[in-house]
Amino acid sequence: MPGPNQPYTGFDARQVLDHCFDETKDRLRTTGEVQFSGLDSGIQTKKQIIGDVRQKVFPTPLNDRNSFTSRVIGAETVYFGGSDLTIDNGYPKFQYEEFPADIKGDSIVELYAMCEPGKSCEIRTFEAA
Image (cartoon, rainbow, N blue to C red; front, side, top):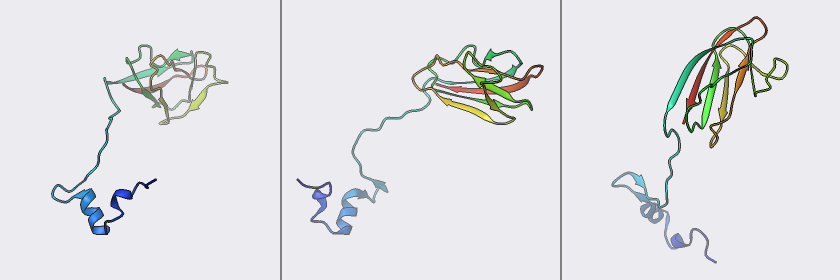
């Protein structure tokens, strides 16, 4: 069975380069299919004040979102988690730290946040779809 370089076995180094590289257009010759991925329908940003009661970070999520990030702007610790979030089981984030999440293919993921009793803090959110 011939190897992957079989079509070039009779070529010297210069012939291989000439065969693969089109110097007139300064491009590498390739064949295949390219699929682009990334933003499809939009971006949504928001400022939100998180208090000492568990609340949804994205009350109305962007349709078909595939990622989001929440950044703590204020000086208080913000705890992130699911619908059962408490201070004891939450994931703490401090000022200027982010909570990024890739949720490709699932726009119904819910994220909750809260601060310690008597505290509140500003966060900024970014969603992409």
